[in-house]
Image 1 (cartoon, rainbow, N blue to C red):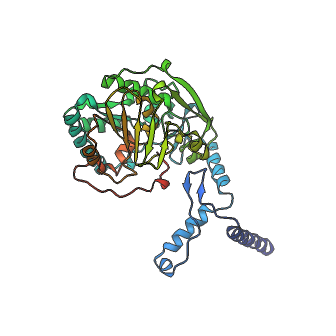
Image 2 (cartoon, one colour):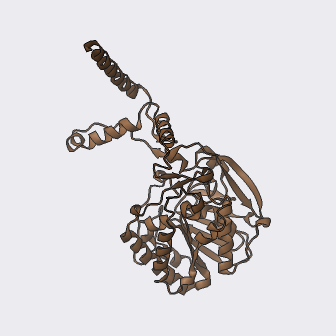
Image 3 (cartoon, rainbow, N blue to C red):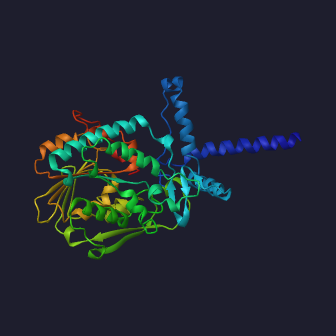
Length: 400
């Protein structure tokens, strides 16, 4: 018995020594494609960090993140959970037909933040409707994938539709023109048997964006382009998005589709005052270089994008948006001579200052994913009197 115990101790000690050796000779990974996040690297030793406990905390995270063959261990853990019959892993529901849907949890939302965002947005929309008119001011709210595709969810899952409705009701009660709100939720749920959201990513597909575009056109009095007016191109068929990277469950890869229309000819894209210039909405080369094929639309999220088109009109649109707008905006190329897109997460300008500086603006569109709107802490960029904003580190933001 003593010999068996001794052998066990020796084997355990050998494993510890082996892993310690591996930790120091295997190159550190700074990013996990599987988990779509930055990894903790070996912390630099400082006595002050050791005394206050920061060094130990970072070192423990480093050991977890740099575990040998970490990605394989993560995949194995997920496989075991699935074999145990779990339908929700790492905050992701294993839905029907290969759909992975992020879990909706009211505990992730803060009522104080929601109330603040409603206050800021209602004030901004009221001022915009007064200045530009209710037909030229729209708030387009886009549901989470779970709320858009409730039929894909496990039977017990919360889609979050009730929370979306209560927030919209509260917002409308503060609007002088509540009809400027366009809720894409019912529109998309009417088409949830179609490919309107990616299976492995939180974004809608170009088809889903087109259904919302058609509703927007009817809502604002623009002639809506029909599906038959577009030539459709599948640009990628190997997309595994942000939701997949949380669970790494093998499901069919997503396809990314472009809807081409003559109105997109002659566009000029200028991002962040010349940082990126292009004659196209689409950036397939950039999207192919990373895992996120959704970046084919405008290459990435950024603070400001100015679009000039060949449309025969003098109308100019300001868009305040999150990443759901990226595949929606090409549909508007024939309706506006200029489009100015602002993403409050990345910039430091007050949007009201932008409106004051651009007298050519004739229309305003605010469009947000519902949950992102509830959680966003950057809407102060719309607040009257709020001026310079803190710069957001775009390279560290992977969800949108």
